[in-house]
Length: 201
Image 1 (cartoon, rainbow, N blue to C red):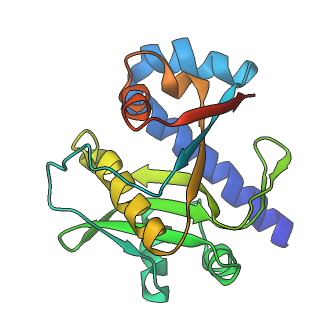
Image 2: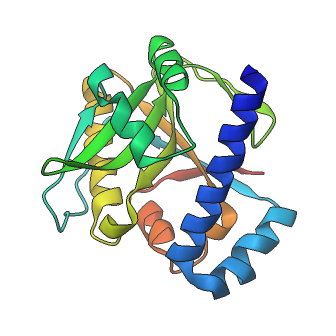
């Protein structure tokens, strides 16, 4: 029964992801870059010290980032249907992982997870080993209507500052190679904040 619910959630999440990518990037990029990547997947793994987070971006809308509390769990589920359920969120929080929820006024618009312990990455079929002080950032998401307004970059700054205050010193993250092609906002952002490429898979 549990396996069935897990498969259903995984299938729904993939449908939402495909729909979101198509709407965000258009059919030419979706067909030309994203679909071919599915048959030859490459990931770029980055590392950045977070001892000195530098503000490089401003946000075009009112925005704040808060660490998720139990009362926020329904917002996570509503923001990403099919991705999360209460049992998954509670399991992650109980294990010590951190979730940030971004707000514009009274509306939740952004999610990003920070994993603070070694974890299994299903898309790589590998376990990522994290040592004390290291964190791995994954599952960042902004509602489509609030993209291209500086939310993602500004949330990254607020996140790094919060992690520094919590005592963490190194951030890892990974991106699909199609999302870091020359000229894209993600590529420019990573060049500006001096992430270091650790390896390419």
